[in-house]
Length: 407
Ligand code: CTP
Image 1 (cartoon, rainbow, N blue to C red):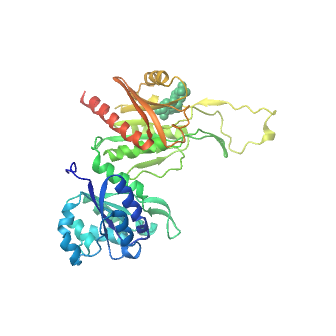
Image 2 (cartoon, helix red, strand yellow):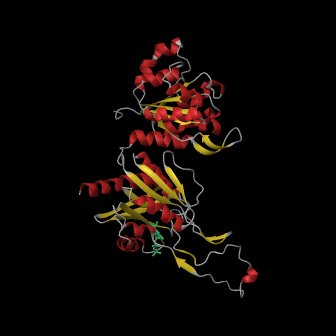
Image 3 (cartoon, protein in one colour):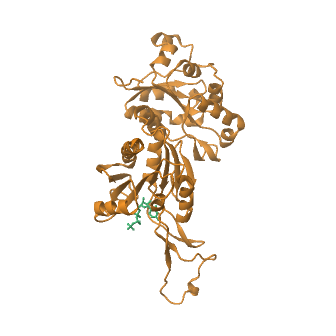
């Protein structure tokens, strides 16, 4: 697609579900990412969101009807289908997905979808049971087979009060996913990437555990960026409060031992392993089946024996075939020196180090600043959002991986 000479042109299809009220926000998120947006509403979508509001944010007249002579005179629907660099349908209702899967052209939006050669993205939004229905799943399968990119849905509370899959991804996530796919080269196309993220919890008894401050954000951002770059991503996550990035396969674990089992079982089938997780170094020597009582302790001083957890990333060097291995290091002093040593000790292809003594970056913050150290050199990435760091790291790691694969 040649988009060098103009902003990305997006036809934003809106079908008739409650999530349509988020469409103006999605328009905004696309515009700030330098896209040009023409909203196209189905007749039912007009019941949920006003074309006037969309016109105000998009700065373009929304299209609602195939039989609107004025609009057709200005730009016919075939012309509109050719104009688009991408069609993004958000929300995509069960009905819209069914019509699209069946190849129908019974309104302006579905007609445009048939007439365009541009990539089509859909962000489904519906009641969880409608999503899980065999008919919807069949349509989903059909759409994917037809080359449509499906974004989400997310899991969570729904407008109908139920919980489950079917929530539309947030407008910002949709805009990020679309722009990333259209704008970035697919540097990891077909590459299998295994990522760990978040903390681990090491239980002493049923109610107490040892853990750390990791939020999981950097690992999740990396998984998302790798997916956008075309990788098949499996994300092994400790307990975090983050939703799964669209298109990423997630495996939840709690303890370091569970994380190790999940990783070891998948490492040989992975091309790249990226260990972002803050794995607890120690676990209580003994797990007590029942809650420990204060009265059981001999004095006012409580001593807990700890046992070292196995080093997950360090053990990957012995896996055959060995994936390309990238570790992370959070340091509070001598960051670069410690990281260089850690890379050698753990036999890593590369290590990403950040200085967590600065409260503006690292642990719970949105931003980060890191240095990527590999056998052939070091790349410093100054302070930026974890999402942006993740995109840069993906492209650096893709280059290193390709060099190794060639060599
Ligand atoms: N790591 C791991 N398994 C462990 C501990 C750490 O896979 N049991 C991985 C982390 O995911 C990270 C890298 O090792 O990619 C470095 O983690 P870090 O905690 O900084 O290293 P430690 O081995 O704990 O070194 P030190 O305590 O000396 O800082």
